[in-house]
Image: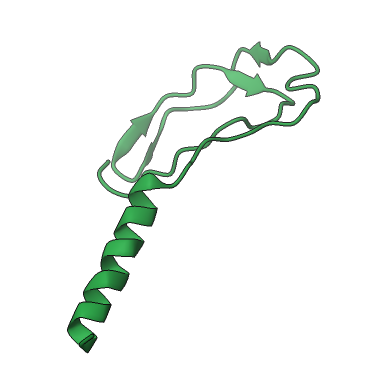
Length: 77
């Protein structure tokens, strides 16, 4: 087998593994959120800009919970 065919085979296996992998999240037993989240009014926070976006604080939010999922965005806004 030539080096080019071997590299092509390795690339195809890597792409197949990437596309067919199981990204499901499995959770064990336990409490997901022991208390209800708290949300309250914002006091004294002014609107601000961050990376070209205008941010207007609307509420304060606090929670103790277990993270059940996550999504990484790699491109775009």
